[in-house]
Length: 307
Image 1 (cartoon, one colour):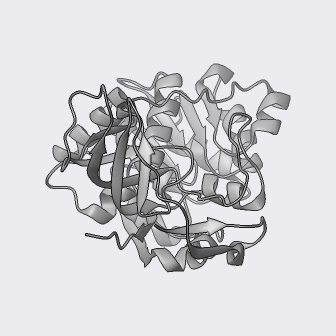
Image 2: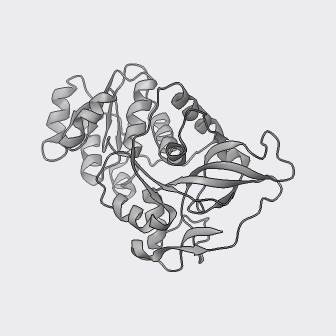
C-alpha cells in the first residue's frame, strides 16, 4: 500500500510517499481503508525521532494518529462492526497510509452529516480537549481560559467548555482570529506582555480553570490567574508544569469519549474549521505548515485509497 513514511528522522522532507506492506486484521481487530487522516504536532515529534515508551519506531515509520475511512476487514471475534461501516478513529502510528489496523475500541461511527475531510481530522484534538477539560472539571458557571484557542485543539476546547456549561470562555489568539473566537462564543484576548492584566480585566471575579496549548509564557500566566493549580493543564510544557506543580495530562482516550464528540458534531454543537487539505504525497508540506504554529483550524491529508 502507499504510505507517507519515514526511513530516517529529521525535517519535513524525510517524510516521503512510498510502498509498505499492507496490514491485515487479526483476531479482535478491524482494518480501515483510510479516506482522510489528520496532521498533528504529535506526528511531527515522531518524525523528529521521539516516541512514547511503548512504541516501536523502527523504520519504516508511518506517522498519523487519527483517520476516517471504511471498514474493509473484520477480524475473528469482533462484533458490532461490519465491512462497509463508515468510521472515524484514533491510533498512535500508521494513519498516513491507505490502510490501518486497529481495535474496535479505537473507532466510532462517522456521522452521515460529517464530511470525510473533517472526519479525518476530528479524533485527536477532540479527544485531547475532552481529556483536558474533564480533568479540569469544567462545568456550569465556570470561567475558563484557553490559550491558542484558534488552533484545532483550542477550537474543540472552546466549544466543549461552552457545551459543558462554562459561563465565560476567554481565548488567547492573534488579532486576526478574534472574530473567529467570537463566532464560537469565546471572548478573545491578545497574546503577549500584559496578558494577565488583560484577562483579569475581562474576568474580575477570577478564572476557574485554564488550558495551555501555547507554551511556557501561557502556562505561567495560567498559574498566576487560577487559584487552584489542579485546575490548570498544559499540552505543550510538561517540564515547566512539573516545576510549577501543575498536574500533567493523563492520556485516557476511549471509544465512549469519541462517540460523545461525534454525537455533538451531529447535533451541530461541535464543529471543526478546515485550514488545509493536501494529498498524501504532500505530507511534508503539511508538516511544514503545522510547524509554523500559526493558522486557524485543522490540516488533513486526503488519502487516495484503492477501490
